[in-house]
Image 1 (cartoon, rainbow, N blue to C red):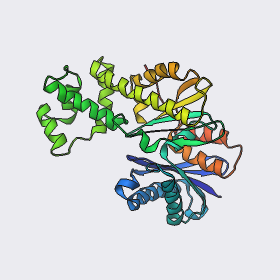
Image 2: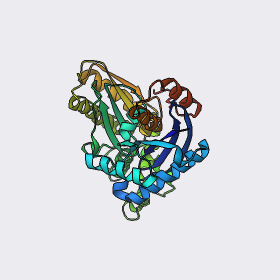
Image 3: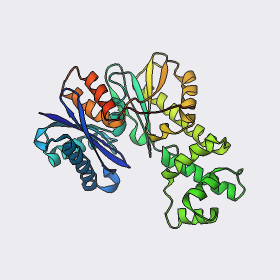
Image 4: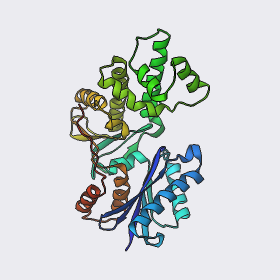
Length: 329
């Protein structure tokens, strides 16, 4: 039996999936995340191999059966990086057919099987990409850099709001008590010290507390989530324009990444409201599948395999890869 090895590597986690050539998703593997541009190619490959070996073992398969490797890898932001990763993965794993893109394009493949569509991926960081009616793909990469990233930026913005409240620059916020309780610090002065002198505060881990404060009606937390969502909506329209997608015509806008699982669903609500004016044809949706499914689907498409959609849907549900968004109120 020949198989496709799908990959989804982000900064936090690396996932691998084994898929047969009929589109049956067979098994998963997971390892720590990486980013080849920051942590080096050797570590990024190690994490991919660890996740891949777990998936292969769970499927009862071996490397000689791997017909292709495909998926989304963070840090593929320029054409030369795509060429580098394609060549490096082929040589490292001994596989002749390799199809990799940025991980946000992997998430797009896991959400739609045809364009036009845009995906906004807000995990630890942020990226957006899209595909038009002709099948042309584009992703923003470093153009999406800036102060409005994913969980890392939300956490840092909230942390700054706590510091601003401490010095009476801005109003008090429930974020202060939530952060101190979660981290076990005595006061904001200790929080400041541990953040900037000891590097002990992981800002992205504070993001769920911002949603918690917003659910309690904290205006500062609501404002942080709203400000980020407005920025993401504008970037979504930028992708549409870059791909010559008619803003008045139907286009799917997929929301993917851990930030969009937070409740209340302020980011989605604000994005929908902005796009209603900026791109009247846009329909905002939560991505149906986890991004790793896109890693397998990408390989099926590039190998020219047909009639796999039903099998992907059925086995994605069996493996728990259909995203449970719950209520987004």
